[in-house]
Image (cartoon, rainbow, N blue to C red; front, side):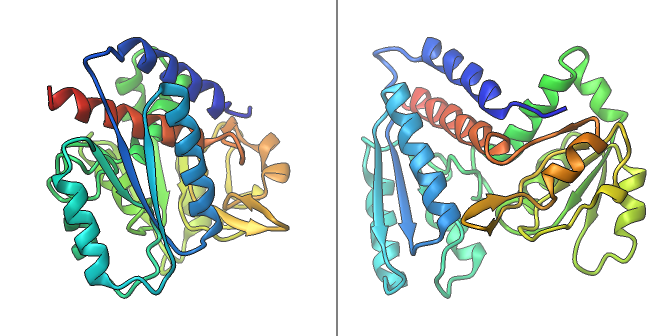
Length: 270
């Protein structure tokens, strides 16, 4: 069954509109470096969602020639701006900058993407997956989830790693696979929930899933001028119990949870 991420996101945004009041003012600053297609799509989604909620989204666009010093000064300025409650440096960042240093640039109370080691917020991508799983099994969600074997494929800084960190805190049956994993098919068949976060085609194939598997595609790659998940959704959709499509899967829910973090940040400044 196809999971309607857009419908889940709309429900979250409707609830956020109810939470918003004239006393809660949020503003999001997004720094976009380079011309990565995935990044541009996500930034446009953030702008669109901000308009829907009446929340200003300022985008600072730079090409890859921006110096690390200039980027640091910009982030420092935004950190001190009391009108801005959330700051994002859109990943991936095509600069020679170590992830640890990048993650520390944004103040922990404005890091609505959840990358800072002391961020006040969980990563929206992990929260999005949690919301998607809740939509599948809303009753006794946590008890159900603790009985599921979860496989995360990929350990990248922007998806696999933060997702694994979030679910590890829940004391779940968690397995991590990566490029050196030799028994990926066996692992997939042994797990109930599969979360590929690689960004390459055919990471998960139709012979690697069970009829009741839940497949949540986070990794994306361009193919024929479109973004595709780490599996051929046309071939695998009827082989699993549930799967997220592209478009309309994890992405809209991810953006909705980002704005939930932003509104939380704004409410804490009152």
